[in-house]
Length: 176
Ligand SMILES: [Zn+2]
Image (cartoon, rainbow, N blue to C red; front, side):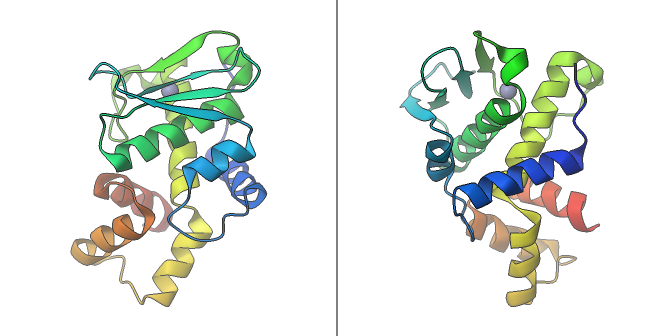
């Protein structure tokens, strides 16, 4: 299990945004997937499944549960992109399946290897969908008071097309 420090995850996500020529929110996960040569398959999966990734074929394949709400699907795709960028060696030719992970999940199993991969992929997804540089610009340009949670979080979540919970966690991790 290789530990990847959060700042490394941030810089890998920023490099990928640059490669995909994405300069403003909402970040297009489809554009990023195609910059990586990955294919996204939208299908109705069992309720408990949010997504999966397979790296054993010609192109990386990302599967996403089309029954999930759109923002959730975006987070899932960004999470699977995180696995492609960070975890190709660990996943190998297996199908990596994600069962309803949540950005809020913080339990005692976090220290275990599998959960470390999930935490890294979630961090990557947050950095990809809510890049620090974009947020700093949004906050400056729109005169947003990030202490004013009731207005800042819904407004930014709307602009970035992420859940309010994901935005709240991201703002707290970057600016508090
Ligand atoms: Zn995962």
